[in-house]
Length: 185
Image 1 (cartoon, one colour):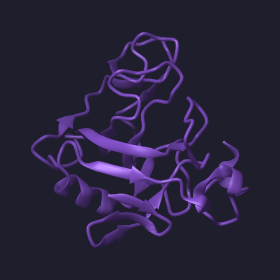
Image 2 (cartoon, rainbow, N blue to C red):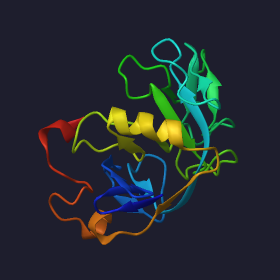
Image 3 (cartoon, helix red, strand yellow):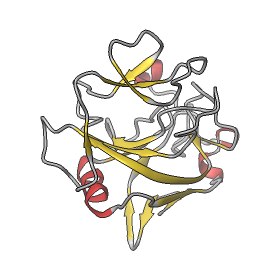
């Protein structure tokens, strides 16, 4: 699989994809909103068993107390943790459908370097043109297709595409800042 200006190339398919609001970066850091450049390997698949059938035999269910630690100073940084958990974290069992299926990459995982970025996942997008916090986000049907066809260890190549590099960003390139009203959060 390889990121292209048109989307993620998987075999002879091109799947539309949203990237981080910080564009693509070689020097990914926690909170920069960027998608890391490099080779990412798919290590795990998580899914909402209460909402849909198991998408693949290797998928593991997301429980009601499952979280992902994004506190760079915490010993469990960039790890799946369980509530109650006081340090900064992301909730995996979301009210919206974005994490109904989550493909976990090996970006700074499982052995995390503090501050090098956390929770770089493949997941469902909010809507076309809406950037992520660094993940790769897909239409629901395309994410389901990926979940059925990928195996653990699948590799995603994210090259330094000029159209997505923040310092070379042009309006409509897919990289941030986009200046759209919904980006004010």
